[in-house]
Image (cartoon, rainbow, N blue to C red; front, side):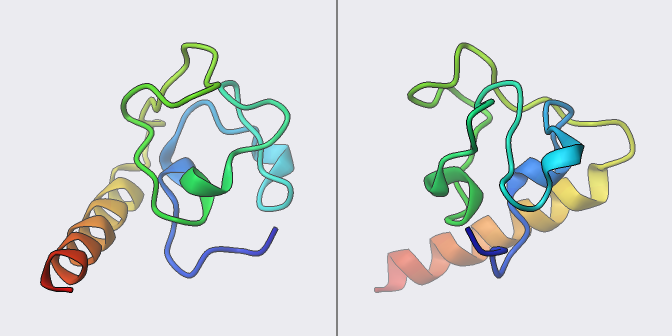
Length: 84
């Protein structure tokens, strides 16, 4: 798995297994590995995701700036997709 071009939501999450970052990334929701749809496609795991074992995104202390960067990237992507 390669590092995504934009920061995934994962970097802001309290559930991230920091010792596995960036490759292969895992977390409490996905201990066997974070799915590509979340990790490299700006997937938003603030709600349920198939196979997440009932664990969703939880903002880690001090990671507000990373979350804001993710939200900006998602908003830019949404504009591009809606224009296409």
